[in-house]
Length: 241
Image (cartoon, rainbow, N blue to C red; front, side, top):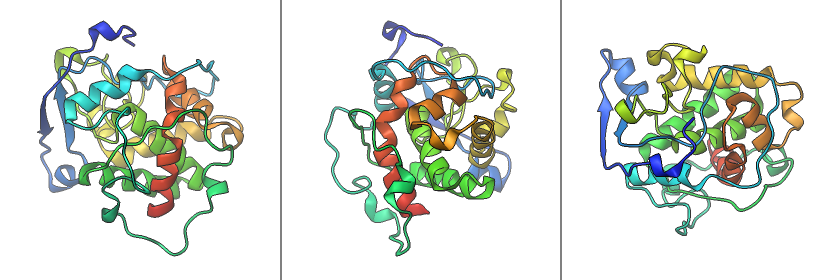
């Protein structure tokens, strides 16, 4: 984990990593962002060992991908119920109750970003994986919030010389730490199910604050940063569930 903001370089180049099959092209296209030195929290090997919570979010984690992808930073106001691309998300009559999505409320100031089609597709993959793995609406919120922090819901490929170790994909999981191969962890379905599989090994995760549950899986140097995405993650899950 790189912990010094001076090692973060603004990035403007981005390319899609081609896959050899149609399925890979549709589901596994990984966004390679040259020049981003780190992405907030690293997903190390799956673990059920709780880690301490720090007192504040890591601003650099948000800024790096914002610079790389041309998105607004968290300090810029973003309005609307979900994102200012909320017209892309279908409204469902039978939405999960807010108390299921955010049983502990929110912890601290909240961040919000607009979503493009790629991000929305990745959010849908996370929500679907939550259904299939049985972690339910709350698990889906934890998964979406974690990906918002780790990659801004972009399926990031290897970042070349500036890659933070070998972290890739929606959750910045590492092949060298047992999460799977590079091809696997840049498959949104596989990466999401791997995350939820690790989450289910955390004792009592359903009753933990989001940042504690996410941090126990991810083992980030900036664990509190996950909390800032809980409200937007709940909005996303409520509309996609």
